[in-house]
Length: 367
Image (cartoon, rainbow, N blue to C red):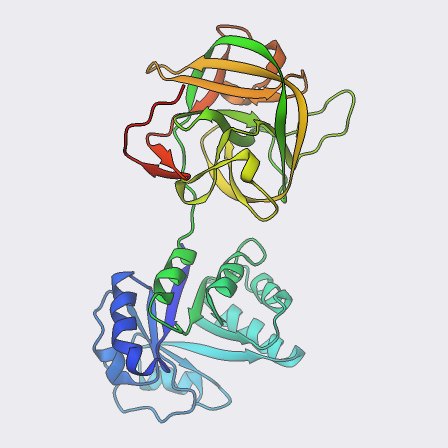
């Protein structure tokens, strides 16, 4: 989980409400330039003093981390001797090659490196993360807003260890915390036994082209009903008549559901560039991927009916062609047109019905 620090130095009259929200959301750290503000906080939050040139008091009781700017504040070694119970961090503003080198040095050697990048490019942050790959300290990068925080958390796949953000209003702390803990669930896949396949004529099917390379044991879950889906494999496996397209899943008829972020479902027909879908492997491990394009074309269709061990009936309608595949136990790749009653495929049984894609507990009959 990534760290989220909230900067309350300039929150003015909103400070009390923002701090209440921050504590409720269990943000990891609160940053202030006044020891008195930090002294009012509970021990569940890291209390960070960032004075930026202000004189330091004799005592830092209640402060966990002191972040200093060598250009404005006293020497870090001197401060460590003066405040032995406080962790010392270093603030660096990166504006050129020299300050970038200072940031790399801080990230390699300091317990805390708090970094402010003046230019919008994230390449300098990539360089710092790479330079500190074996370091034991933490990099906390300042973000202007939640959107930038989400980018910072993912830079170079590793991302910054944490983000420091000044909230513009009540609600920003909640959004920052959500960005920091953004994870996708592990799903309990089940083995479904095929009961019937039927050639059903022409219709529109959707190919979902993502901005990501899928692994060979990975695809997306697709189904005609919200409570039962089958794992459709990506085009990572060789075919005799065309090159592989490991970013693509030939997913099924346009009415079908697939899983996206926050436990929502989307119809394949409503996906578009920038949409998110859940990539799932045969172990049920998931990750969120971005859709680059959806291709909807008229093709022959095949209906696959299967049943779960608990009796739940599952249906999937795919393009009626040998090259369209689903995944079975152990990552076995099964051509859809060769499926027969008794064959076993992998699937997932969401527990809730759906209303505009959101899970909801209500009566809903799908057939």
